[in-house]
Image (tube, rainbow, N blue to C red; front, side):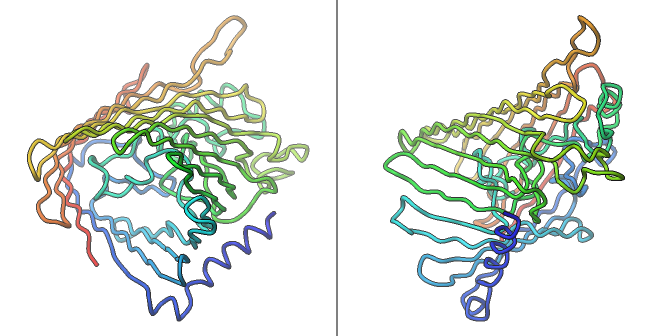
Amino acid sequence: MKCFYRLSIVLALLFCSSSALAQMQISGLSDILFKNAEENDVTNLTFLGFSNFHTLRTRLFFDATIDRDVYFFAQILVDNFTGFQLYAAYARFQNLSGPKLNLQLGFIPTTIGSFVSRTYSDKNPLIGVPLLYNFHTALSPSLLGSNGTLTELSAAKDARSRSGLPVIYDACWNSGVEIYGSAGNLDYSLGILSGSVTKPTVEQSKEIPQFTSHLVYNFGPGFKLGASAYYGPYLYDDIFGEGDMLDNASFKSSDFINSGIGYELYFARRYLEIYSEAFYSTWQYPGLPDLNLISGYFEFKYKFRPRWYIAGRFGLSEPGEIETAPGINEKWDYTLRRYEFGLGYKALRKMTIKLVTQINRFDQIDSFDNELIALQISSVFN
């Protein structure tokens, strides 16, 4: 399996040959942002410490036509001109059997949920990412021991490390293979991921991948209803063993599963668009009971004038309860609620200006609460 993934990456990169370069289109997306800098923010950071609320962010897109119905895509993110990230590098094969069967392989986009199409600032009506797709829970393997304890988990709640695992992590994609297509009004996707939706990876570092499925039924152009599911190990084989992070040679990655199921909804009528998603997720970790969490959001966008819109998003991260003492149950992490509202103006065909406020509120603790106010200028260039 590991060889298969390495071969997939190599094949995807080989498509970016001299012949492909001749047909390659290069474009970009640049964000400039001003905010109330004194606010401490622990809810928007990625594993690398990047944030949609950083001052300068630039994405470069490389799109190449290899042959008829064969394409190559690559993407690079530069954050504040100090951080660099390869965001995507994959090949796409379309119409293998008409629209019913397509395939993409390499370092591919998120295979579940509906936010991936709105992850970029020119498509995102606000600035932040839904909690479902980036908020770091208290489940942080770097802070928990080889046999996690409730004391360590409680300490991780207060540490709020950016190594904590989100439900779905859209700030980084996975190496893998996705088969997708449509049959009538039904769109489908089946994915095999080198890492997991909660912890993506470029390198195949466990023998058993995570599997994903995604179904969307299109009732009409203004109404879609879908469901996603995923199942598979999420910890890596190389952290098990004597002297490793999980110092227990009897453990292996397939012993600990990350799974989840969720729904998505899209509704549009005239100048109003509504999105809603929610997932129920479970992580297994050595020494701890199963950790469950419900996370979701409701989002709207309303165009009240030709170039103007208002938007809002309410997000929730609600952890389940575990037994912390005989007869005593407590939530394994803090509940977080996020409220984000914004005003947008399409100044030019390729430029959008947004004024956004984001409010984050934790239950039982207020030291991580914040209220961000930001002005973002998002520009597409090619």
